[in-house]
Amino acid sequence: MKDELAFRLFSRLPLTPPAVRDQIIALSNFGDGLFRPDKCSAFEPIRTPFEPTDIREPISWLSKPGGIFMFRKGRPAHFAGVIWNLSRSSDARFPAGPFTNYWTGGFDGKWAKRVGLEKVEDFLAEMFRVTRSDFGFLTTEIDLRAKNRLVNSYSYTGMDPITGVPGLYWINLFSDQYAGWFDLGHFPGGLAVLKHFSNGALSLKFCDSPEQCRSLEVLQKQRAAIEWLGAERFFDIGSPDRKAVTPNWAHLPLPQEQSAG
Image 1: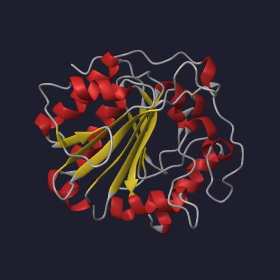
Image 2 (image 1 turned 180 degrees about the horizontal axis):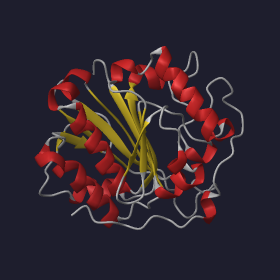
Image 3 (image 1 turned 120 degrees about the vertical axis):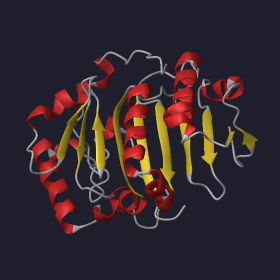
Image 4 (image 1 turned 90 degrees about the vertical axis):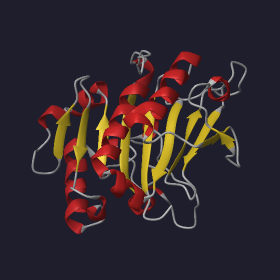
């Protein structure tokens, strides 16, 4: 995809079959099917037609420990992503971390503008709600790469809130528990636009358009925001092995399943 907008969602909600069903239905039905996949699969290549009236097979893929649901809309792709079930079987040598419900994906930049960036933002907010995520973000692929990819590496680092907040980006969403931990209700208004959601979640938006993501002004505001929130709580690509301060996720109650309707 060209001029890609990338998003991530990090949730502790277990991917039980009912939770998987709700999330796939929400993905399919948002905006009267605006983001509904054409194709899906549990592995590459993505060739299986997505049938919104019968999602039994995708539910079976994703509800298993280590399962995935890959999806794509358009050819060439306008929108594509993966939902990862990072849970592990009971006999696994090492237990899984708390963030086992993980969404990765992106939008073609021109397509996103054509359907409307506000629609893309609303979609992200709704998926954040349905997944009961603790953190999520939307930014340009270039911005994501600059903040989370080491030189000579093809993978992203710092993409797990258990090791620190993955960073600040164009648009950032925080659950009510995470927002409370940061005291985001008192965040300085001059650094970003603060938006409150009805479920107690908050978002920080640092600029009007994704083209501004890498501007000096925006990067300076994000650095000031990180300092205000506590730099010791964030992943830093300059010190990727630094241990960050994090909430005691193991002692926080798990999110409850919430029907997408």
